[in-house]
Amino acid sequence: MTATSPHGARLTIDLRALEANWRRLAEEAAGAECAAVIKADAYGTGIDRAGPALWRAGCRTFFVAHLSEAERARAALPEAVIYVLNGLPPGSAPAYRDRALRPVLGSREEIEEWAAFCRARGERLPAALHVDTGMNRLGLSPDAALALAGGAALEDVAASLLVSHLVSAEVPGDAVTARQVADFARVAAAFPGLTASLGNSAGTFLGARARHEMVRPGYALYGGNPRPGGPNPMRPVVRLDATILQVRDVPPGATAGYNARWTAPGPRRLATLSLGYADGYPRAGSGRAEAVVAGRRCPVVGTISMDLVILDVTDAPPEAARRGARATLIGEGLDIDEVGQRAGTIGYEILTNLGRRSERAYID
Image (cartoon, rainbow, N blue to C red; front, side):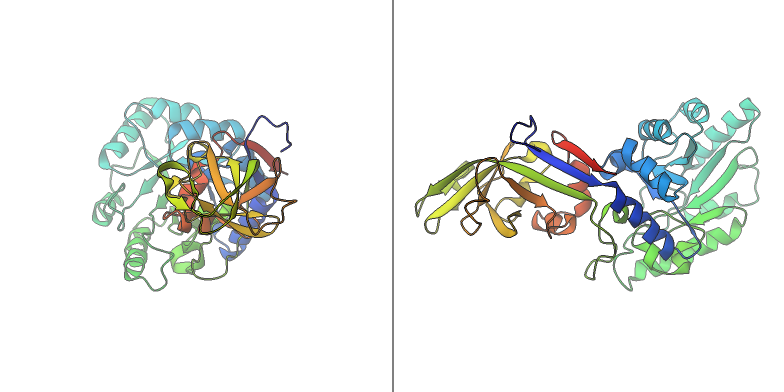
C-alpha cells in the first residue's frame, strides 16, 4: 500500500500460514482426514485463492454453506470433493449433479427429493446425512437418523458421509459436548459404511471420540484460536493496515467523532485513518479497539464512522504517526480474537466482514 494507492486499507492474507495451519490441524487429527471449511468466501480470505492453497497443502474435501459458494469453489477446485452444508434447496438437484457437488441432507424431504432425482437419472449420487445432536438448526434428530439405517429411503442414494456439529467444543468439559459425542457415536455405529465427521476447529483437539474419520476445521485455518483461554497453536493469516490521512493536536476538553463521545483528558495528538465500518471494521469497537503504530498500542477514540477511524497517537513516535504512514488494526500482536472481544463479538464475525473495499495482497 503506497501513498498513491486508491485504497484506504490493505488486507494482507498469508497463504503460507493458511497451509501451515491446515498441516498443523491434519497432524492433530491423528489419522483422521482433515477437510476444510471455506464458506463465507473462505472466511473472507477469498475462495479462489484460499481453496487452491489448501489443496496444495494436501486437503481434498471442502465444505461451503450455499450452492453459489460451491459453484465458486468448484471453479477453483476442479478435482475436490465439495459438500454444501445448508442442504438441498427445492429444485436444485440438477445443479448439484452437473457440478459434481454433494448436498448435506438434513430432513426427510431433502432425502426424498435427492433420492427421486437419483432414480430419475438412474444414478446413485453421493450426499451427506446431517444429524442434529444439539444445535436445533438443521439436521435429522438422532432417532430419525436411526430410523433410516438399513431402510429403503437411502437405497437410491450413494450416502458417503455422516455429519453433526458441536455446540460448544471450545468450552473444556462441557456437558453438552459429552452428550453430543455419545449421541453421534450411537448414530455412526448404525451407519458403518459412512465416513463420520463431528469435530470442528475446537473439536479437532478433543480426541478421537470427537474426531471420528474426518474433522472439519474452519476458523482455526484462518488463524482463530481453537482453544480460547490457552495459547493459540495456529499462525495468523490476515493482517489489516490503514493509511493515516491526517494528524492533529487537540487541547484538553476537545471532543472527537459523532456525538462527541470522547473528550481529550489533556493535550492529545489524533490521527485519522482511512477505514471505517463500511470496510467491515466493527463500529462496536468505538472507544474499545486499538491499533498499532510503530509498535505502540494506540486507542481508538470517538465513534467509528463509515469511512474513518480516529486514533490517539500521543504516545507513538511522531515520525511514525504522520500523514501517509500506516496503522495496523489486525496484526502486530492484535489478533482477530482480541479484535472481536474488544468489539463485543467474535473473531469469526470480524474475519467474514473484512475486505469490502480494502486492497488485497496475498503472500504465496
